[in-house]
Image 1: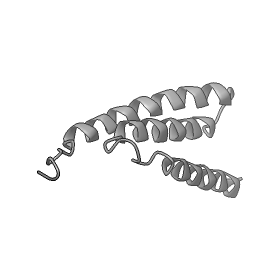
Image 2: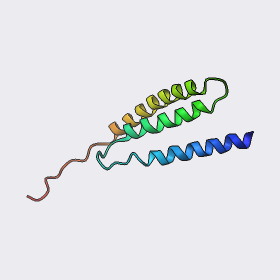
Image 3: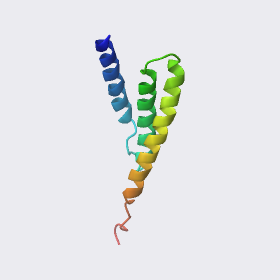
Image 4: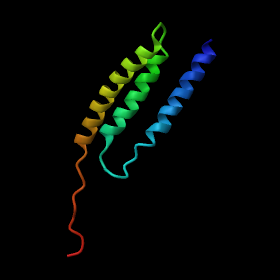
Length: 92
């Protein structure tokens, strides 16, 4: 039983890490808020689903909402601490 739980946790965190790579900075340089929201939602949903008790779907939704809120807040703080790059004007 314990080996099964460890296996599920390992697969869950691996999936979270892989999905986190899909939120790169191709379009916007400061997108820690988006990355935090996605990573927090996935992590919260996985943790909520894997807790003991009944109503796994309900716990996954609640965990996803809480994780997204915490991840968004953390990412927003990180975005605000890093200044936007400024344009130097190029060739003049």
